[in-house]
Length: 610
Image (cartoon, rainbow, N blue to C red; front, side, top):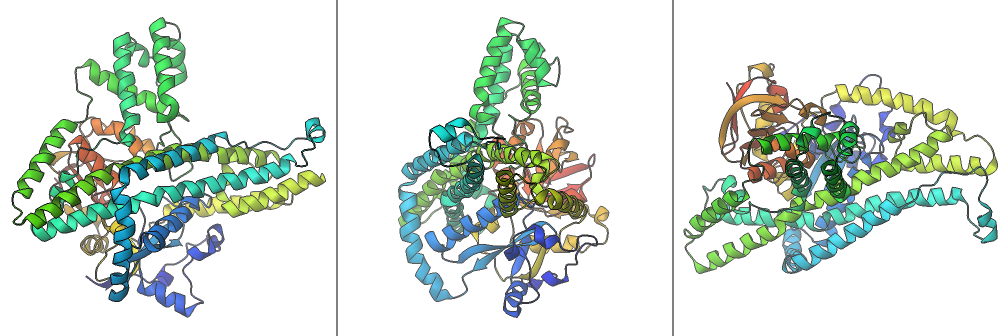
């Protein structure tokens, strides 16, 4: 399928937001004054990255988009030499990021890159366990540096020891240095994020392609089931909640969990008994590191962690304790999934005609199974543990800026780009050193108020699914398996988007994310705050899902998402919980209304409003 969406320049600026471009890096802007670049942009295909950005991005929060713009692209293009694609280009429209896989169009270049990829990726696949252990060590070291990083306020007068030790440096210099270290650790963390991830998806895509060549009619679902039943770190935070729920029953303090939804009240009640105090010790042990889990995706500063709001894990612990008290099983059906996985592998392997194909099947399957845990595991270390600590370190910078009048509220810091914060800190530190008022105290508060109004208008705007020209074929592995963007899905989204009345839609399709058919009441949840309204046995309909939502998967009986492919978090988790899921529907949260009865077919990707 080829086609044309709106041209980037045809997307109009929202009235009242003129000049919004200064809130983001200049290279993210679609241009109108450079004919060569404009031609490239109009001939490229840009799709809205709703998987990571269900709402507009704050100027500071763009740091992660910049970080993965560099990291994913460098590993694809310059390090592993992925044959059919270079990197993934980025732009922004009205606060919403758009991305475009850059295809390798010259067959000779593709051929040349194959040899490099086989050598370089092959080395990683052959030494995966050893290299992954090294990776975890690097991530733990980076997080440790972050946790120990000191963001110290500026004193009225430096301590006398600065003089007696002949230090020769000031707290002002240390603050500038600490901010640089904070940003550098964030970028370094994201360098590591993509060290293995491209290869993880590439191994799955390679295995999928091989299976589809051998068995032209094989459903994608069957291939994903062959690599299911995985045991990953990302599920451990949820397992810790279940352990605490079971411990509450063993100690006989489950009733104390229910005295309040406020953890401070429950904590005080627990401290009054010996079993309660024993439970609190276990609770405290579980917090570090397992409660460094974001309540959202971790990509936004307002996605606070469980450690930031202990009422969140308390709610899930209480729910699990209630289930356990009724004798309900809290475990994921991992054994059954593995049994089904092995049966499917045996069934298809028996159909392979030649020893050569059988050997290739075995090797590709083993590689895919080896790399799959990383696809989920990396999120705990990066988007959750690291990000949870990082956001609060930035808030420490915000406290100092507020004390010196550059911002009115600590949370105002997110309306500044990371480079603007560095400039503001220089202004503040030199003013402190000189004994005068920083200029930014008069300029930044006004600019931030304007930017707040712009962000409000951005939230009211609905981003186009895509702009530019649709390519003949989409080959970038992330785009297909993570975002669920294919020629077919774009065609489906476009047909629905063009309808005048979405209320008239009664049947639509997405990707078959996890097998099975289920009917139930839909509950549309666009944010983590709305998750609290989910009732037992409902079907979750959301833009995407987050690992921190894991406890709800023991409550719902199906899941539908707007964005995501067969390797998105929602698809993987639903397979591990043995429940149907349809992902990458494009517009489910706009079509489905809470309270409607729907039927989802996780084996075909069909959704019916009954």
